Image (cartoon, rainbow, N blue to C red):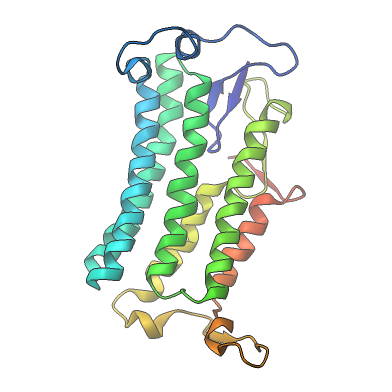
Length: 245
């Protein structure tokens, strides 16, 4: 049965109502093949491209971490650019799978995990690196990442039940797809371009009243974090329907 990954690309998976035989690649994964690197040898080309998405996300996170040490804006720019390259690989993996006419359950799970790294963890790490570092900021960014995690898990669990057209493509997304978080990254990139990062974040800083005896710094929150919170909420929404182009 043809289903789609997070970006809407058709992949093959097991029919939940009537299980079908595993693909050759999936069958090899659970076989008694104990040779060295047997899993890697069974990767399809589309799986390798999906891993490139995950590599881009991981390198973006490392670049954000390096910026915290070096304070070199070049590291920050590199962190930002890795994410759209991850999106490019995310678009191509499904197309390559259709072109090569091979895909697997492993590829579907790889796609979701890579998306979580590149479009969930990497944007949150970037936001933390540019100054959203208070306790409340960190909680907001954690909420955003967890919403992305839940959104991908729900998609994998329910995609077989979503309405599809004659070609097997779904007509809409339930909630925002997680790659849409790059819109926040683009906005963040624009607002800090050529400016003093510590004073250029939009929406300002708010102070949440804290009980007596607790450090007031713990209640500081950047208004920009609210965009991450709202985006995370939109990702897990069941009533928000986004037409698939």
